[in-house]
Structure formats: structure tokens, C-alpha cells
Image (cartoon, rainbow, N blue to C red; front, side, top):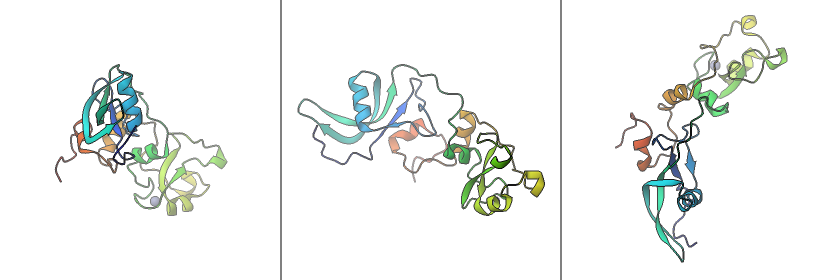
Length: 185
Ligand SMILES: [Zn+2]
């Protein structure tokens, strides 16, 4: 396939059959290769295109920027337990002092005291708070997270995520993402 432009940064936003993103965190994006493969396998509709053409000896087409699945996929109710999602649940704020810098993770019940690495025991904490708390229980050092850590729903993260959109959002994606992102700068 002959490609005349650099394509690494041209992923397609993948929507479910109901035109919601397949996932928000991380945002469901396919490489242009995967998007085109899915088009040829007849698994997706093309919703929107980039202003770029790709050519091969046998075909020429616009690069898709948004595709939607033909078959509805039931979304996961609970988001993955990832570093990013813990930060997102905690709104990128230290759960002890509210700082937004130098964020790390703290086990509320320290691992050395049997605390597990779960949604219910891990919170965002700034490095100074993490250092101060060290291997102590909250009541031993009087440091309690501002909200009891919990397993969030996709909806919880979606609500928080509107305040922290991904760095790169192509304009053709905005209609499918957040109501409150401004369309014009
Ligand atoms: Zn802190």
C-alpha cells in the first residue's frame, strides 16, 4: 500500500453501534490499519473521514477518523483497574492534602500490614504525603483519604473525565465525546 502522508497520528475513534465510544478510558482508538481492515471485513460503518487519501494499486479511499461497529458490544460496567483510572477516580488530586503535583499511589492499609492492591485500598497521593504516611495505618498517623476509595463505575469515570479530556482530540470526534468541550477555541 502506498501512503503519501505520515499516518501514525491518525487513529480512528471507534463507536459502539449506539454511537457512543466503545470505551472512554482509555478512549477507544484504532490505528488506521485496523480501521481499514475492519472496513474491508464489513464490521464497521465509516462515520467521518480525515482529509487524507490512502492509495493502493487496487483502491483509493479517505482515511476514516470515526467508525461505528455494526454489531453492538455490551460495554463493561466496571472500568479496568489501572493507574490512570485510579487518578481519574480521585480527580488527579492527592487524597490526603488535595495537591495535584507529584502524584503517586498510596495503599491506605499498607501492603506490609496486609493491604491489597485494589480499588478499595489504593488512592492517589502526592509524594510528600506518601512519604509521611509510609507504612502506617490511617489512624496511627491521622491521615485519612478525603473519600473512601471505591470501585467506580464507567459512569463515575466518565463524569470525572470530562474535566480531563485526552490531549489529542480530532475535531471529528467531538460530536461523540463530551457535551461540554468547546467546539471552537
Ligand atoms: Zn498530599
